[in-house]
Length: 446
Ligand code: UDX
Image (cartoon, rainbow, N blue to C red; front, side, top):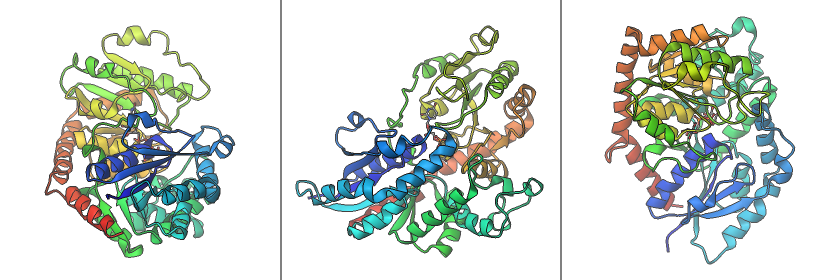
């Protein structure tokens, strides 16, 4: 009889996609799959007929919070504080089900830290999935130390001060979530790292060529097994774990566009902007003259349930634009007509752009996005940052720099080299494929 793996994604799009990609890899290697999911952002189990799904009733907890990003932190901590209440019974019932294969281990998201201790008490080995880069784990380790030294919250005068132990990060690039109390992030990162120390190892959605130094640095402080098996989405079919319907007419539209001519604009599943920024974005795109696909996610314009494009925008961009609520992003980035990506630098988007060799305009907003953008612009040098107040002239200029100027040609050349490194790691003898084999071997020892 084979073995079963229990997987616990954090119920946010940027965490669900990589966890379901891990599930697909393990399923293809013979494991049976059980996915635990909450009512909040519950996964459509009909898309995965061969997996078992266990719904965790988090209604009472989730209903206390608004969808705003700041509230996501409070919701996350409330889930962990109610971990026993949420997970104990459904986990014990799965473990005691003799009709199912024996459980090899539980794979949990980094931020489900209290699940570590519940699983340990129930005798279930755990692995942790880090859905961001290895570098972010080092940021999480450093953050509490900087906080305790009084350097966080960062003073205005120190924003551009380098974070000595996290070169090339500046203080402004450290993880932050809007105007949330930094004590919350301090607690989240402290608990998260302690729980990793208690786990059997960490799976990271990254690859050695871009993260091996940060992996070595992390293991010096937390000596657990680490498996860099990303980019996960390149080992599995395009994400069918999308919580929103993806508008595939983007791909037909791209067929009508010249190679490398289209700017793809998307800011992930959580980011929002105010209406003024929305109007500036619209006219910056229109005035650039560059063809573009713009994802305007429902609810992403603060204070607006329905979003009307600015007067005259549609006429000014007719034939040159495609505005959708949600796109098949992985396929869009892979299309030859796409030449650049204006992104918020969520990790999945950053990794997906690297895999398709698409240079970036970086407009990070919260969490790990600032640090991801700093690596894109100052370590790999495969993008430029759009800094300060969002204005149509700055947007138009950034698009010109990246898609028309010599600077952009040099960035594209570096991005092609980085894409090649990402392609090599997923070959059968590539670093990530080898790490998957090592992970499977490691799991068979449980
Ligand atoms: C969240 C955090 O915001 C981010 O900082 C962290 O690194 C991961 O968790 P999110 O903001 O949703 O992620 O961004 P990202 O990590 O880029 O994930 C978005 C996912 O949705 C990607 O896999 C992308 O392919 C997909 N997507 C995005 C679509 O399928 N369609 C879209 O239109 C936009």
